[in-house]
Length: 261
Image (cartoon, rainbow, N blue to C red):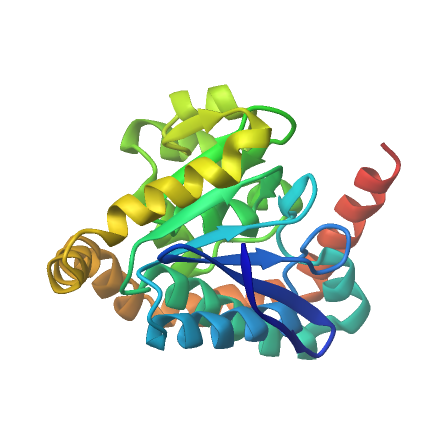
C-alpha cells in the first residue's frame, strides 16, 4: 500500500493511500470516527481532491473496529444550537459530495456504521462489511432527531423499499449477515479480507471506461438529486428541529442512557 497523504483539518485526520488504481480513504478521527464539523469538512475536501486525481476508484473505510458511529452527539449538546446550524449544512455537503462522486466508490465497512456512518456507507456504489464485529443501521429517530433531506434521500436510494420504513422508524442496527438480507450491504466477508476484497471490487469497477461509468451513475442518481434540491424547505424545518431546546434535551437524555450501558 503506497501512502499518498495524511490530511488534518482541525482535529480530523484522514489517511489516503493508493492500492493499484484505487485510492483508499481511511478515517482515523478519534475512537469512533464521530461526524463533527471538522471531519465533515476534511472529508469533503479530500473527496474533491480524489475526484480530481488519477485514481480510478475510491475505497472508504474506518480504523480498527469502527467505520463511523455517526454524528458526534456530545459535541451537539455541548456546543448547542449555533453549532448545529453550522454543522448540519456541512454534514449534508459531505454526504452529497460522497453520493455524487463521479468515480466508483466502494465502502469497506470494518465495524460499527451507525446513523451517519450507515448513510456514508449507503452513499457508495458497492458496500462490503466485515462479518465480525460491527452493526449497521439508522437509529436517528431513537435519538430524537429527524432526518435531514440528504441522508434520508440517500437511504431511500440505497435500501430496498420494503425495508426502509422499518429501518428508519424502528432504528434497527443489524449484524453484517442481517444487513445483507435487508439490502444495507452487498457482500459480507471475513474481517481480515475486507480491505483486499474491497480494493479488488474497486479495481474491477475502475476498469469500466470512466465516461460510461460516470454518466450512468449520474443518470441512476438523478431522481435522488432532484428530491434533494426540492427539499430545501424541509431541511430548514429539520435544522430548526435539531437546534431546538427540546431536541437538544432529547439528545442529552439519549447520550446519558447510552453511556450507562
